[in-house]
Image (cartoon, rainbow over the protein chains, first blue to last red):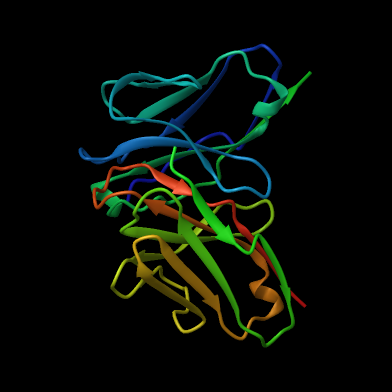
Length: 111
Length: 117
């Protein structure tokens, strides 16, 4: 079962770029990397998913090195509303498609 | 993206009663749904995987007789907390996966806050 490790918390200021790195040393060949965002008392919201190299959407970018043992979620120009918990998850054949949540990273954006 | 709803959004009940929580995929068919619980300041904990038309698969340590799961259709899964006690008070969240593929995005419901008095 692929386990993820990410910082417990991060602080940033409005307008800055935030990079959250996640390590997943035992990721399997068929596993994907996915990131979710969760606000208090709400269900998680999908942000981005990737397999290798770089993926970008309207919300974030995901950088995955060639060895795939880590990944970095990049949030450009954060605002106060980006204050949330961000979860890095690995899923696929190593855990039969189940999403197993780790502790997540609590991002606090300050004015 | 696809929408998943939960009902009720919150419920307060007396100890010893049973509570049913519904999870619906509103605009897609979900062959697989998942149930999680989340305590304050903690991460989501997967409780069980629910497949349409078959018995749910429970994670280790989750009592299947305590948390009854039914996935009778491709758009509805229910979680019944039987004989609820204060320690069952938690935030219950469901998610749905759109197709049978392992790598498809899961869509989460808004959660149900259960408080047992």
